[in-house]
Structure formats: C-alpha cells, structure tokens
Length: 468
Image (tube, rainbow, N blue to C red):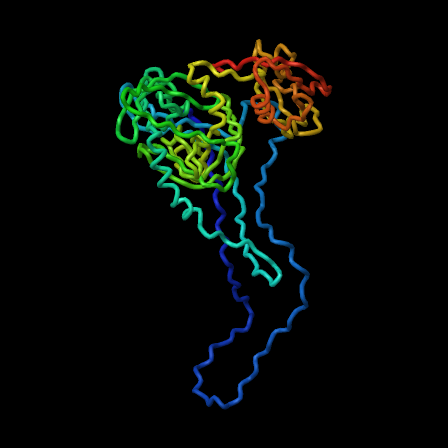
C-alpha cells in the first residue's frame, strides 16, 4: 500500500556435483575377464588384503550447532545518510483500495517485514545416556493433547465476546472495504480492536457469533499502541465481556489461543504457544514495547482479535505478523499488543479522550561504524539525533539537528549516550525508556557527545502531538 520495495530472499546455493576422476592417458587398462566356470567351494581362495590402519587422528573440533548470520558493515565510503532506516517495517493491509465505490475485500493484519539472512542449518544427534547420566523425560501429554482438552471449552465461553469488524473506508477519492476482529471489554457495548482496522473508516459494522450485526462508532483511538475502542448500542441484546488477564505473567511455552476473522472466515480459532515475550515493535507512528510473539496462526483479518491463555483470559490483542512478502500469510511469527498496555489506556479511550504520551521531539538512529568513524566516537552505542522538531522539548533543552558542509557531508551531530545517568544502547532503547518510565511534564537528564565533548542537558517532556 505504501509502495515499499521488498528484497528477494537469499537464493540457496545448489550442491556441487560430484566430479568423477577420468582415466589419464597412458594408464594401463585392465580388460574385463571372461566369466569363469563354477569351482568347488572347497578350493582355497586368496585372502583379502586389509588396508593398514592409520594412527588415531587428533580430536576433531566441536561441531558448530548454529552459525549466526553475519552482517557486513555499511559502506565506509559514504558521506551522508538518508532516511531513518529500520529493520522492521509495518505495511498496512487494512483495506485494498478500489476506484470510486468498487468494494474490495481485504484483510487488516499488519505485516512486519525485515531482511532475511541465510543461516546454516543446525544438526544434532543426542548421544545415548550413560548409566549415570540423566535426561529430561518427555511429558505425559503433548501441547496438542493438552490444548484439545481446554480449547473447545474456552471457545464456547469466549467466542460470544468476539466480533468480526467490517469497515467501509475512504482515502481521498478512493473507497475500500476491509475486515478485522475485536472483542467486548464492557457489556455496555465497548469493543477493543486495532487502530489500523478502523483507520479512515466511514462506516463500521460488527457481527457477533449468533449472526447479529450492529453498527459501531469510534469513541477513542491511540495510533501509537495501535489500539481503538468502538461503541455499539446493544439494545435488548445482552453482551458478554471477555476476561482480561495479566500479560506480565505470560511465560514462554505456554498455550496460546487466537479467535478472529482471518480472510473473512469469521470466528476461526487457532492455537499454538507463546514463542517469546518482550519483543519491541517501533515505527514512526507506532511503538509497541513488550509485544508477545506466538506461533498460533494469525492472518489478515485476525487484527484486533484476542490472544488467550489456557484459562481463557485475554493476554494480548493480535496485531501483526512477520512475513517474507507483503502478500504472504502466516508463517508462524505473530505478534500481539500486551493486554496490560491496553488496560492502562482503556479508561481514557472509553471516555473519548486523547492518550498523552511523553515526547522528547527528536528523530533518532542507532550509532553504527560509519557514524562512529565520521563523528570520532569510540563506541557504536548511543542514539544519533538526525532531526530536532522545532518547538519541542529537545529544541528547548539545546539539542540540535546535524550539520553538513558545502559538499553535503556530515560534520557534526549530537549523540545521546545516557538518560538519567544510565547508558543508552540505541535509538529504540531511549524511546522505550521514555515511554515506559516517564510521563508528560517529567524532567529528564540527557548526556550527549557533541564535537568530541560530553555535555549534560535537561529537558521537560512534552505530550506527543497526534500527527507525529
């Protein structure tokens, strides 16, 4: 939708063909012997000559089970950087645009893109345990067996709280239709979903598992966390609210269940495990620290639906997948906004108020080897200030944008190396610490390197503007 170009995945190297040794000219050729008549088994036969056993070689080096992909450093000859490159890219799939009023059904799950580097396959054969060794014994039931006993009951209990979201959207002269998911958080008619599901919506309708459809309106949005709250008028319909769990208690390996509307297949349930916690998703308009990763199948249309634990509690809001291309579906890498993040701002969104988040007012990049060389830094840790927003807390504190010579070569830039006396490892580290640990109006201390000198500045954090 945004015209991103995607790199091809690295091609696999074909195996080298086995070369046969050709006979050299001049070598004697042994003619084939004619078949000999059958001989008596009692006759003596020549003994086979056994090859000489060589000496025991030195122990072979240990086998590398995993060889981490190597990333080449940036071109040392470049003199100016452009863009704010990020490894992660969010590509919206909320609604495929069609000319004028032509409706085009589409999914609404974001795609997380990043370059895929080829890694060597790991191979490992476990040795048989010795008499004194102990090994971990397999559990009595597989994850699938354990899930089969609880998933049907959870689905019956939670599915009535889940909705399919259908959106008619517009962008300028274009109109489009999209679909997503959501779930009831309050029986009065409040429904939580993703912001990108209802972005630019002209009309919204939600469908419950019993087939009832109700019109919905947006009462609160927060683009930063990709969350939104809808409101329906239930009338005589008795709504069931999902139970919100505690995402801080989520453990890697536990059961994960997703219910949603993938590709328009309403009220589909999929299951897997929690693959990882604490993932960071940071984009210019979206920042989701502590995202939950799962291998439960999540596809376009699952966006906004609940991610559940084995007790049927909502632990996350399904939001994004990572895929090799924009058009790929689930490959086992799904991500959800932690439900505790949603619970912090739900009262504000339900009240129709704007969520205020602390904001320094700078655009940042990680320090790499090129920056370190050009700016004379001794380390590649820190965050380079690539732009200061006019009138922001950063400008008031004295931070400045980079400076270039007449040949457009970088000659000076501020590098933030510490926040409140604690080392800053990179741009994401600084952004997330401000979001998690501070509020609007807090004063922070910034330690920076400028032209080889270490300076200390103090900034009073502003509220992030809605358009930033």
